[in-house]
Length: 295
Image 1 (cartoon, rainbow, N blue to C red):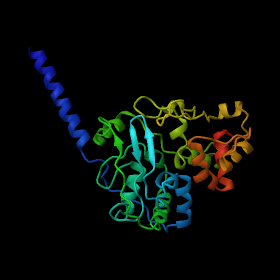
Image 2: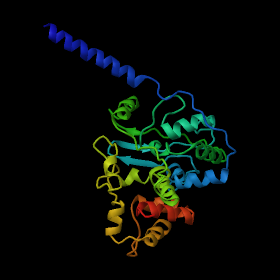
Image 3: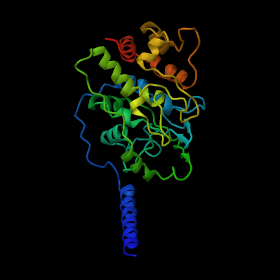
Image 4: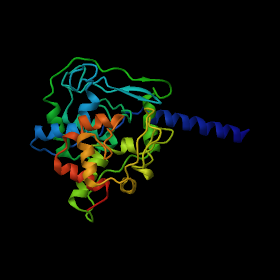
């Protein structure tokens, strides 16, 4: 009897502790951003490469730039990108730079609510203060649009956003990109683009049943993407084995045309048209250098 009561007490205490953990506001520690002179043009470029334009602009539905509403379907439900225009009510017009940095790099809203990982904040954690400041300066030039953000269509228990604190505690996030002094500057820049800003691994790395990326299998492709599609492996060994050259890879990222003359399909079509086609020639070279693991 005593053993049963002790076990029950442990379960109750664990439940209470878990409840306190998941309901506690997250990530509201002060965020310090080093003061820099913002570069709006550079920020606009980062917004393109990072996928902000593609994910937050419902072009097919006639939506205003950055007004959100793009549906991201998954096995957990449908997520809708939010309005990130300068509208104070529907967008992020009343945010501070610090609010933006916390949301972008930590996936935490100004009110302390965690964002779903459909927003690739873990990859944006590699952006430095200058990147964040420039991106913020560019978004500040976006005209306000009052289109309200759509609620996510996610069923129970995934609708319990507080449970994301447990999910984050259990599953490791992609590591912050750091410069490898043993590799060339081009390789390191390409790694920052792929592992950070452009978050290539978000689609080309398989995920487990909980939707967390299997980091040990980075870039080996995902045959069962969350949206029901599939992505091919783009690790260096596979790319080379399939005959991809630096020139072919650069052409595909710039035009969406594969070496065999076929057009890249699926979500990659949008990635190219709204993202990689805008990469500077130098950065296309860098990305190819990293993906093919050349120096």
